[in-house]
Length: 374
Ligand SMILES: Nc1ncnc2c1ncn2[C@@H]1O[C@H](COP(=O)(O)OP(=O)(O)OP(=O)(O)O)[C@@H](O)[C@H]1O
Ligand SMILES: [Mg+2]
Image (tube, rainbow, N blue to C red):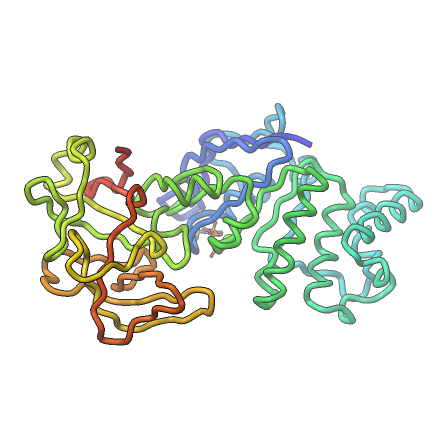
């Protein structure tokens, strides 16, 4: 087992100008489950492939443990990779698929058999060892792909969207299995997904990438409680955080007829390029529905209500003086999302009043997008 360290690791693909991964600095602890997450094209696979040795590092370096592997051949890095398209050999049995890399490496037959059987036991595949992949379900095939990585007993597991070929229910099941398996084996793991829920549920820590740049690294709790910038705030959490930029009038962030109190300390941190405005984020679950007339309540006109049984979400727009602010959900649509109790669901067209629970608002610089801690 080993740590993994990216030091200003940069990848510029031939014929392109902007780095696909730009000076990535990231240290992963021994035994840690780190999830790389971000939107399509942000550089997740490139980061992983640089670590695997499948992609050149144009500047910076990568270490596994204390060893600089930047120029080491993929086969000599002691890593095992599980891809999205896990491509099992169709003509080989499950056992042969799992043991293939060991066979190539010249491992004695008896050792291969023993390691394959151990892995099969862990993965609940013992009864399928003599089958061909086509006679397996999607989830079972996915486990064979995991088995293929496990038998190699590598220092680091690399996984690139290994669950994307599975249906929704199996994905949820398998993600818990992979997470608990990783904890049991204690092998340092770098896991790529574009799904923030997968990231939050599986990772010890999460690294969020955007446009090849690392935005923030932290525990799922850190990302949820203290997103470092507007992008992370809007990306992590489901449904997404509501985010708006407001004018500051006499020290108060104003939303139509409502005002959101902002501390003097926060206002004092605003810079010239914030242009006397402040960006405020508030999660759907951080809003309380209050009676009309409650001081500083924000009026929201209900457009639709999504009832999920345990919760209900109101998708609405700000009532009244719309010019004052455009609050949108971080998901990119122009709706304000409010979580309401399933037994007090408002009707479409109705206006509800909400306040942001104390301490649950997130403040950002409109200029740089960076978090303001106050
Ligand atoms: N071989 C290549 N040549 C040129 N550009 C590439 C190459 N491979 C990837 N890119 C570009 O590098 C950027 C990062 O790609 P990468 O595959 O790492 O993204 P990703 O985060 O894994 O996305 P996805 O979630 O869609 O898999 C993208 O803009 C992509 O178009
Ligand atoms: Mg990818």
